[in-house]
Each structure stands twice: as structure tokens, then as C-alpha cells.
Length: 280
Ligand code: PGA
Image (cartoon, rainbow, N blue to C red; front, side):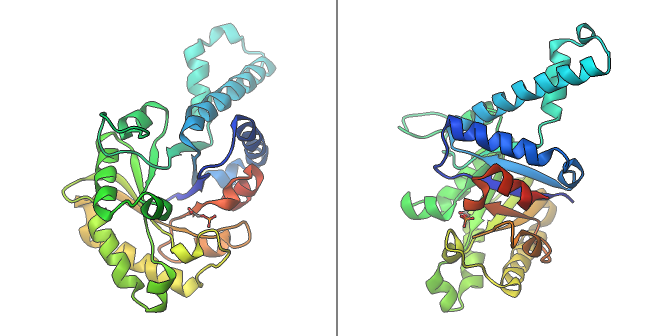
């Protein structure tokens, strides 16, 4: 099973910075194609950059394909523009995702974007219930569950975030807390093609504090156990990610932990070349 490595840019990067990121990422990707076969990289930029990144990548890829076709002395005229577009799209080494969505398809919800709209802009994943959304936008488990359900209805993969704060960890109530969060944040009666749960301890996000291998393993095992018990009725496949101060220094060690199927990376994903180092 491929590991999933998600870049969560949060509210960062302009068009120009996105171009730089893409250049650095592609630069690092070339020469590391073999390692990238073992992972799926998912980039979650701010919404306005999703379509832009897709377009910028495709333009560059089509140029490169034209060059390689010419180098092989095949006639470009033999290929239709659809062929080129398809070849370029298949060569994109990352998927795209949004950082949030609304649970309704449309309506009077100023400032919101629905899962259906997200689907229309070449995204295939959506992060739902990130602790920053729970904290600053007062999203409850029930709201998170409705968003995840909306994602499933649109064929999008939800990345549902769970994780305890420092107080709960200190009281050693984290397992109980995460169990409850999962119970109410995963919609009932919905069958997912793929479901991703990200364990992100709030005290670790952006702080440089990383739980020990044993601590991550304990929670990853609990999440896997809950998902496995629900089994095929819940999702055809499920993944457990770890997130919180992941860097190129600790990524390998965390990825090697049993039941950890990938990473959700914030700060260290903002630089394309750092993100590549985490992926390879
Ligand atoms: P961080 O953020 O890697 O900067 O700690 C992770 C996240 O919030 O998803």
C-alpha cells in the first residue's frame, strides 16, 4: 500500500510563491521518480491556488512532452492535443486537495465553498475538521461528519483530523478523547471508497514538539483498530496519517511506525524542496 503524504499549506502562498514551490518540487521530483512510486503526494493549497497549480503543472508538462516527442523524432502532429493533455495529466506526480468544504451543495453561506465546487476544480481530497477549524471556526464533530459525508457524495476523499490538546494528554485521557472524536466525526451509514484519518495532537502542531514513537504508535493502533472493526461497511480502504511538526529530519522514523500510513505536513511543506525530502 502506498503511503500518503499531504502538504497542508494553510493560509500561505501567493501565485508567485506557488510557482516557486512547483519549480522546486518538480526539480526534486526529477531523479527521484522511483521513490515517488511508493507514495501519493497530496498538495492542499489555499483554494484559489488549486486550479492554478494544476494549470501551471499541465502547461509545463505539455511543453516537456512536446520536447521529448520531438527528441524521439516522432511527429507531434501524430498526437492530438487530447493525447498530450492525457499524457501530461497522467504524469502529474501529486494529487490536489482542499483544506475545508461546506456540507451543503449550494445556498446562502457567504464565504463558504461546497464539496461539489471543490470537486469541480481538480481536487480529489479535502481536509476536514483540522484543529484550527475546530478552534477558530467552532466546528463540532457533528459538523465534521456532515462535511465528510458531503465529500463522499462528491467522490472526494475526506482527511478527517482528530487529536487531543495538551491538557487532555496530561490527564492521560487522550485515547478516550480520540475514540469519542472518531465516533462522532465519522458519519454513520456512509460507505467511503477511501477514508483517511489524520492523528494530529494539537500540542504538536507548529510547536516542534513531536510525540515519541511509542506515543504515536499507541494512537495509530487505536485508530486502526476502530476502523478495522467497522471494516468494509465503512470504507474500501483506510489510511492513518500522523501530523504535527513533521520535518525532513523525523519523517522517515514516523513513517516506519506500525499502523502509520502517511503524514500530514504543515510548516515543512511550504518549501517545495523540503516537501520532496519528506516524500523520498
Ligand atoms: P505543522 O502543521 O506540520 O506545521 O506542525 C501540521 C498541521 O497542522 O496539519
